[in-house]
Image (cartoon, rainbow, N blue to C red; front, side, top):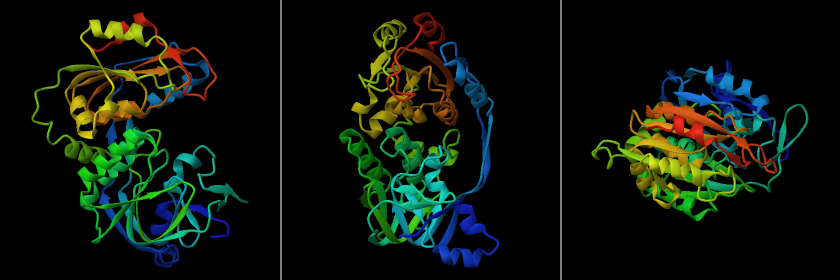
Length: 380
């Protein structure tokens, strides 16, 4: 595709007043509604301590916490003939429309999606080599930030958990990104084996464009910063926890350590761990467990404490009534985990710590948490 590519929401391609002509041009072969429109409420957090939050971000956090109610439209899949997949799962229809829903995370930041460059008048062009043809039908599960375990869980795995509601032909396949991290790659393989046993996987490199005969494109079940499809997460929980639901009531207290990960390093982690252990906590590194093991670990937790990061995405598996305390650097007011805790029925609190160096991108800097305030907010 050598020409310029305009941007269009999925809804415009399937609901346009000239629907038949629009669908034919875009290659829309069919649209299925998996789930109806709805909404959910986010209970107010137990506490959010913003004393160490950067001053210029406090209004942002205040606005985040004002989002107590979330509405959403119907969840649909569209089967697109001759669609192109490029970058981190961005979709281009055969009539040169970039499906906005597939690249929202980039476009919301006024960034060209990976694999694209800006053209004139808000359009884009592909920067990848000519597309490679993929025959047959494939379900696209590659989404922006797909390398991150947390995003894999709430974006792709939650979508795959709904596959039983989709009309999928024989010999359908899955399009994913190829994980460079061996542990995350193993977790992805375990998830696919659990949710779609026997289904073949195609690993799409970010620097290639693929033209797919029949691409099944599911609308996102997670749209940052504040939406996750409740039934997608519920279906994922049910499948991952089916062997853990009969386990004894939640009782474990978990301090989730990032294990020396350089991003968002907690400078005084040892001091906080000592406080937590005194209160009956155990230190865990969930990434050392397989998917079912991580699900069972968090299902058994009555209290979870940890630095904002991918491992904490496992609070999706917590039992209702669990209590979560998230530790965040003072330059990172992100509502992902508040929303996720709401879906699990967990009580949420967040404690910001003072950034101790600013030599990394915002949200990746090291920080330190006030031990006294940590002791006060620690779930018991």
